Image (cartoon, rainbow, N blue to C red):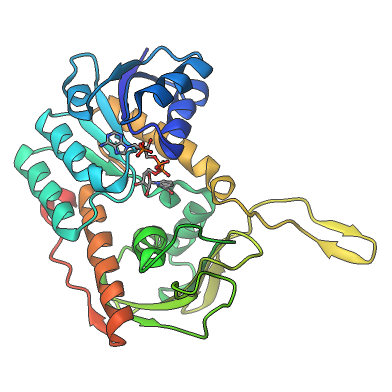
Length: 335
Ligand code: NAP
């Protein structure tokens, strides 16, 4: 059977991860589930012929003797409580982003984990497991182009139903914040947010697009365009300018057509399709590392840094100023 997993939150991503573990991945089984909606969860289990036991509370599931490790895929504001309870139970826990909805909540998790004395927490920043980001990182790490100077990135989505306020930063750009510091082996020191002309093709209350400028400790300038109502597709770009050349994320592979006087290629529209393989790799690597008592992926410390960075970007968006990003020294525990 392998690792016996409990999943808390059987919504969109909780269902996907459960099916991924049960139907595609190896060496783990979902033996326990919890959600606020019992009826809908049991219907999902029945529909897919899954035998997991339903628990009335997430905390009860975490404490169950026959659950080895936990996936937290419930609504963001519940993550902190479930991750802290997993640490208290001494169990490995994979938490979808955000680790907690505030930087202080993330810090509390970091402190609880350090107090426990062993890393248990991984955060669901799946871009680190995407083949194209991994290819780009191996080029940068090889230093064949010298060191990086400037990153030009774009995060474009067709539409963002339900987005309000600062969600483009706190909900979407968090993936950029994690993957870019991982690509560069660096940390951020400041943020500025520039608001260009607003698109008419989104809700009046939303500011879209944004341009986020981040500066790293080593002086690299990162320019991220966030455009969540871009209409035409889900388009993730990262172009790194180095001392003696440039490196860019490859386009997702697709057939190129030459037909009827045109040269065409499809653009992915659905974010899930863009990262579907990354989700598979992310969870299989988590299962394998957990089975041998390791955390290899994004840590609680990474979740904390991302939250601090998002807060600074939100502050910069509202102040119009360059805001400092005050990231404490990485504890030895997380090196
Ligand atoms: P969702 O469809 O709303 O699913 C969340 C589920 O958790 C719902 O079934 C919800 O029930 C349930 N829930 C809420 N409070 C709970 C509690 N206290 N105990 C147990 N279950 C509870 O949301 P989602 O899209 O799956 O997102 C879930 C999390 O994953 C979010 O934090 C999101 O940011 C993250 N996520 C990450 C990625 C990624 O790219 N890595 C992608 C998608 C989502 P009700 O519906 O009845 O409230």
